Length: 362
Length: 129
Image 1 (spheres, rainbow over the protein chains, first blue to last red):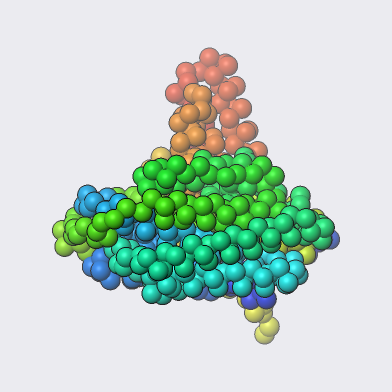
Image 2: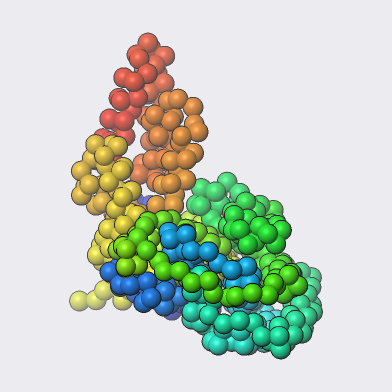
């Protein structure tokens, strides 16, 4: 069907405010955005195809290379999928250490997403403050796992390294500093009049639209869908008494505030883990065998699912990865951007959904 | 000869998306359900959907199937929500028109299965048109 519009405006594939290349084609009437379409294909890795036929020992390293920002959760979901296929138990201490590392990864991802948003709405000061805090989180990740990204910390039946007492002390001290700073920056974001002008009531995603696009993670929870949090169904998080936070506004402001709230929630979760960390082994052993499963976990951006089929030697026969950015970017481009009143808000709305193109294209 | 720098033929990339494990399963299920050739359905989806919607189709399809199963009888059998909202193969207005035709047939005394199969034929024709 031929549509008559004033002008079709493409954004990207290279945009100074976006972390990765994508092309958003907006059809506009004046400044008003009528619809948006997305073109991908600038960074396709074909990683699922590379994984097929390889032993799990190789695939676990490939899995965390799907995304450089949330590599820990890819590692965790892949390994936990193998553990569920082969009924491999995980010692309590290792299960809690997995939560510690996963929450640190979530914190750095959320802080980076909020930095990107602040940078996009030209509040560079707050953006740089946030990047500074993120470095502290990355340092803690490195101290525990030995690497800032792609740490391969989680292995079948446990984790690779134990948490030393001096590292736990350092982590607690750093968490206190991070909490203080994030609380201050949350206040700056919450009360900034210019931030409110660029964020409140812009890029609204209603609960119904979020449901239709299958939105997940902070994007869905900012539209009043706390039930989408996969941590509610994870046994270790259940033991920790995890309760998701959510908001109702569904606009850019709510999505950024949601991430600030979740950073503070992650700090509380890590503290609970440290308080209740039992003595004992960190690796129980176990070898992945043949089977097929669909396994999901809560990545920083939302529900991450692995569909895996393995043979008796633990070789991956078939694998499909459903990343949260697929759903969230779709929700953004086909629902949030539709009806945005100014083209200037397109890039900020796009960034507010925390798009990860590396995950989307895999 | 001049051309747009970034306007490219996306067919091969769209085809790569559609032939991945979960997409392929979805296409086969829909093609079997509607009685359409898989190749034709793939071509139809590639022409109609942007890459992001295509990437998200398996998630939307699963959620659409769940919601369709909860819907009342004629909508459930006709899968109105699934084929117009979750996997938007036809426009909502077109689906509303087909649904009202099915309702009219039922009001005129046609058995429900017959009216629904007429509706499914209309959906198939709308896709193949």
